[in-house]
Image (cartoon, rainbow, N blue to C red; front, side, top):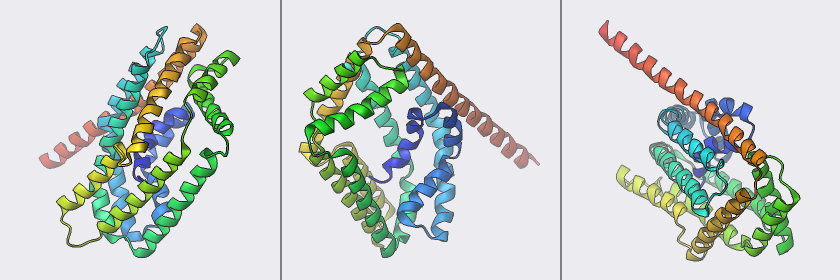
Length: 303
């Protein structure tokens, strides 16, 4: 679903440059508004609702969710110091991230309820065209004509992410990853069908939210059910595939970690440490800002 992208913004910083994390995160509300505007072309009135709502959710995330993210990063950092990492340990990280994203999605429900009824037919048609272009872009990047080409594309991305964490991989390690990907082929046709289903789900929900007969409770249930379908697709063939694909990825991560050298493990520890420091500083500043606001409010009321 479109709104899921909002929830991924903070964690995606981990895959980028450490020096940009603080800047990107602190400017997340403005970036989110710009990104969403690219899909809806909001009116001035809609922006006046969206902007403060994004800042409010950002403040909540900074105070409540960042400490949890720091804890998760420390757990991951400890795991990479070990000689082995079980597939279950790797999957625990995936489950923790999904849980945090679900909480973030839920935090946006009031904003969706407030803005969706004001969306025009023109805006929803514009959204449809943007979602279609995004689906076609995914198809061009991930749905290669041959299985060999699919493996090559997946290998390139997997190695890129792995080398961000562990540093330069050896040829033997790359071969290990390639063997794993070959044993567990992808099914882009299932993923593409799911993308189209989700796009249709977004449009159906947003159009339904414009029905004036819906009360707030009905609107909330409608959105919550949409988010639930993101967690577990009604397409059982896709759900079975993505569950197995996640387990396969966790197994690959486990095998790769078992092959790492002490130098690579140190690179991983240092990599996590940089982000732990960045997010810890952001979380600490949020607490200081909150304390300052409470003090200011108390002094104002005492006058």
